[in-house]
Length: 349
Ligand code: AQP
Image (tube, rainbow, N blue to C red; front, side, top):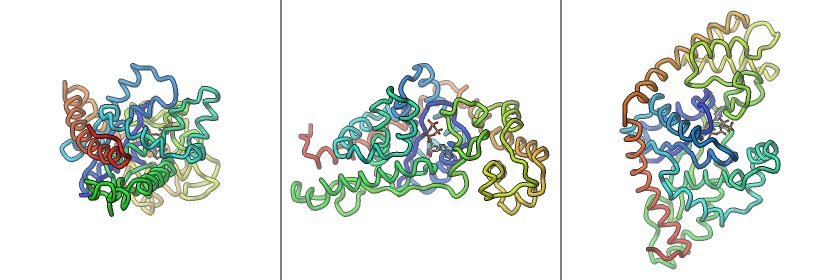
């Protein structure tokens, strides 16, 4: 079976962008792929200071949301990134093959570094290399990500190609007399993955500005709907969200990013087609549409929240899932790490 790997940072509450851009696709992909879904806690500290209690709580909450959203622990390995030390070690090995210029060009680094000023951490620059390690350790064929992460995925592909060029193929064979173990093609050390971004939901926008993406790090709580928001909070956020002065509602008008975003959100929550959404809501005024959207979001999230509460109330269940996931992940990750160490010439122990 082909493999899929993805993760979300436990840096705050998981919102509809994370959910529609990534997590919901985890559920579909686990049916066809050997799936590895991690909570990337090592990434969460790249932004600088993190309150330890918050990191701990968010890590468990994020894993529970994966499960509540439909990730099935009997089909997919759900684990915490830091429970698999190979992520940090492969990151170091890749660091030494990664040109610094590649990292300085990353849009997310440039944006976040501008905000962080002099406090910007080495970890933030290194974020995409750690992400490459996450993916390459599992020889993942496919990586479900929102559009914002596609540039990082491109870097992962470039880095895998570079490591293969430096150490794989003929070079490996000449030294070892055999190809590396595992599932890479043509004697490569690492497998070059593909990105998977959903057609709808790949870029969910902020409620307060339809031109910027919904994001955990936006200080305005009203800019996002969290998967665990109460019906009251959802209603309030949608009531206050940014709209425009046009008549009716439509998709795809560049002058109306909010209309496009909120209609898409409605479409994603109801599972309707664009045509059906337009037939239902195209002629509505904002005042009529907002309560309809509110109901759709609440209805979509309600079963996830119920399941989330059940998971959190079941003593030991989440820890058991994470332990089992980490055992499986460690086994796979250590095989790849051994290959890379071997390819680079480290003495095995
Ligand atoms: N607005 C979004 N629309 C669609 N997909 C999104 N993702 C994030 N925001 C949106 C996808 O969610 C997955 C997990 O993201 P992450 O937690 O690793 O980091 P991020 O992309 O940096 O997400 P945030 O929530 O916006 O965090 P901050 O505020 O720290 O930047 C990824 O697959 C991502 O593409």
